[in-house]
Length: 251
Image (cartoon, rainbow, N blue to C red; front, side):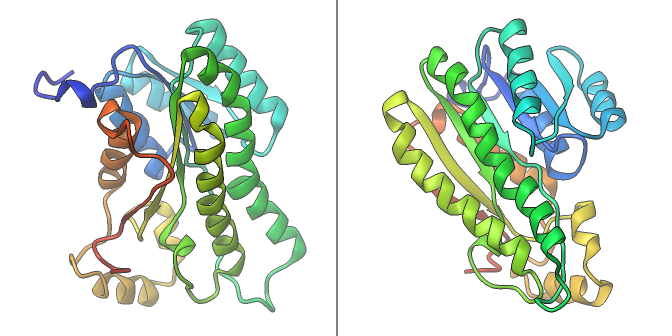
C-alpha cells in the first residue's frame, strides 16, 4: 500500500463487500478499497470477470457469486464473509442496470427487473449486512445512486424511480442505523466512462459530455475515490448525506 495515504483514510483491518464488482464503477471501487488496505469481497453474477479481478488484485480480495435480488444469495455471501473474517465494516451497493425507454415503451417486466437489481438489491444488502456490522461495532454503507436520482432525464422513468428510491432509503437507513454506529450515505455519479454510458445513443452521449462544465465524463476512479473516503474514518461524522460527483453538471 502507498505509504503516503493519511492514517484516517486507510482501511487496514476492515472488511468490505462491493456489488456489481466485475466491471465499470464496481471494479474501480473494489480496487480502491483494496489499495486503501481493506479485505474486499467482490460480488457479481459475472463469475469470469469477477474471479479475474480478484486474481489481479491478489489477497485479500476474493470473488463470491452474488445475485443482489436474491435474499439467499446475500445470505450465502455474508456467511462466507463471516466464516473468513468474522466481521464486516463496509458495504458498497453498486450493482445496477439501465434502461432508456419512454413510458409507452416500458413494460411491467422491465420495470420489475430494474427494481429488483437497483432498489431491492440495496435493501437486501443492507438487511443482510446488519448482523455483521453490529457485531463489528459499526460500519459504513455507501449506496450508489445517480444524478438521475436528483433530477429528471428523458426516457429514464424506471431507472430514475429506483435511483430516487436509493436516495431516500439511504437517508432513512442513516437515521435508523445511527444508534448502531453504522453510517449510510448515497453517492450520485454523473455520466461516467463505463459500459453503461454507451447504452446511450452516440449523439446523446456527446451532448451530455458537452454540457458537463468540467468538460469530460467522469472516470470510474473519480467515484471510487469518493467511496473510499466515505468508507474511511475521515468521514466518521458524515451520514445521511448525498454526495454528487458529476463535474458540476447538476450545479
